[in-house]
Length: 398
Image 1 (cartoon, rainbow, N blue to C red):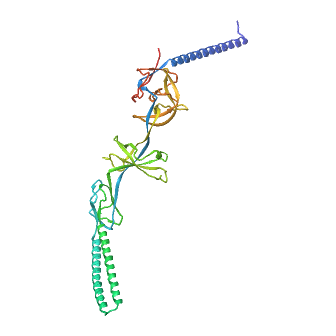
Image 2 (cartoon, rainbow, N blue to C red; image 1 turned 90 degrees about the vertical axis):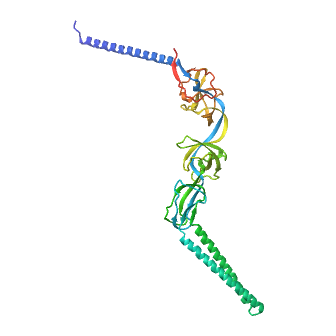
Image 3 (cartoon, rainbow, N blue to C red; image 1 turned 135 degrees about the horizontal axis):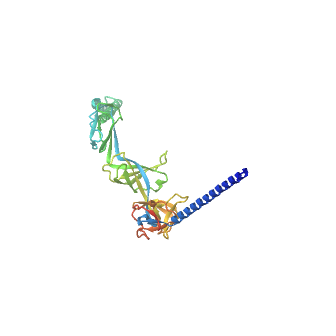
């Protein structure tokens, strides 16, 4: 039978309908398979059990928290001296260099003293001349006094001789003062160490002509060092003389104990910071200028606390993960003051019941409601377990 044009149209329409029906059936099958996969994943997720070790949890308890302030600064010598020239001239005899030990009163250099020696001699000769004038005026006054008693001269002449004698005495005293000044200047040509210490800088060279107040050497006493720390205006309120700090030198593991010795009564003009000076208990092996940082203990407080790392902030409000009825629960908390308990940084919290089993921060985020199984006997974990980091794994229940 011959197919007409109308028959072709019906055939094409039937093929299209078959294709559409096939596509719908295939889409429905794919959707059903997807729903079944999601359902199976939900069931598997619901059956997931988180395995925790005893060291993965800690009990929330009231603890004594040591509060402190972070401090830092450079070490400085309590006693240091900058030796300057007190007389002008050529510098001679300077042999000490950086690192050399000097003692208080030790001669470390001299300024060429020829001119100053001549001035002392000149002043001494002028004093001797003034002394001779006193002797002459003394004899004149004695002679005139005898003549007045005999009536040979007037009393006015005696008064004149007395004035001459007084003037000669004054001139002699002035000459002696000039001798003292010249000797003082000569003594200033000798430079002595004012303190016992170590030469930190040599600022002049032998043979160099120095002026008055020219810097020659710097001496520091390393037997007593202190840390100069800048405190914030608010932090300085809690700092008291006598408080101790644990410091560490940059690049060294040696612990250093320091104590607040002085607090500047005035804030700095620019930064408004307050300077605190901490003396170093044992300065052996330390040097001026080394950078140190550490914590200044300002007091203790008693609060319900958990490890700082256990407080999570990946939600709008801070929370901790706890184990309740063998399931993970998220408890919103309000963090408070921080401090140290043992060797761990703790934080006081509100919103948590004492004795709550808190999951440590090293475990990572866990789904709320997930079942928990302890790999060790840890239904009531130790109050302060060792800070060892135990791995946590998730397994699917059979």
